[in-house]
Image (cartoon, rainbow, N blue to C red; front, side):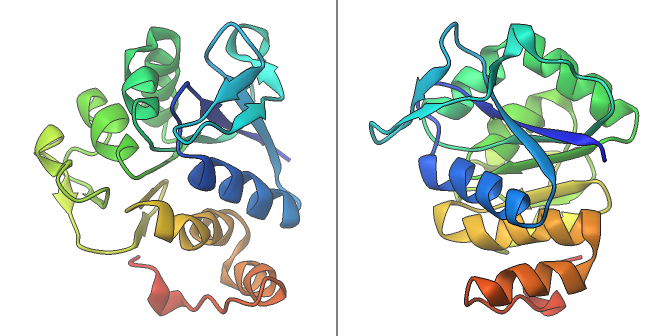
Length: 191
């Protein structure tokens, strides 16, 4: 199975990052957290320290399934300024690879890279102006082919389940959601 990577920068939105990792691991997906800082422990926007699985410099970015950017401030800004990550995102997206971002990250991280250009997406209200070439939708989650975007912290579970549905099918996402006492249906996602 291919490996997925979720990137942690100082000031990341904790619920968005940890919910995605939790749900993907429940589904049996290989997801690793990657610190873009020089330390494994990264402090989120609300003061929660999270120990990443690896540092960016130590990661082997071969055979990638997903590259995932959680939101948060200044987390999204820090991700957007980290050139090794933006180069990786551009290369992966240009090759048709799967990319996901939530909250401020779609506009701040993916927008400047052109990944949202002409594509349906969602993000935190008020950030759309940072990526005017995206086709913004007022939805909790937008999942189209190899791109999943989410609107914010309250959408974290639906966002994570949409990633699972994209990779493993709606039936698996429904099984995972049911076990967590939520009931994802295909109409919850804007495909």
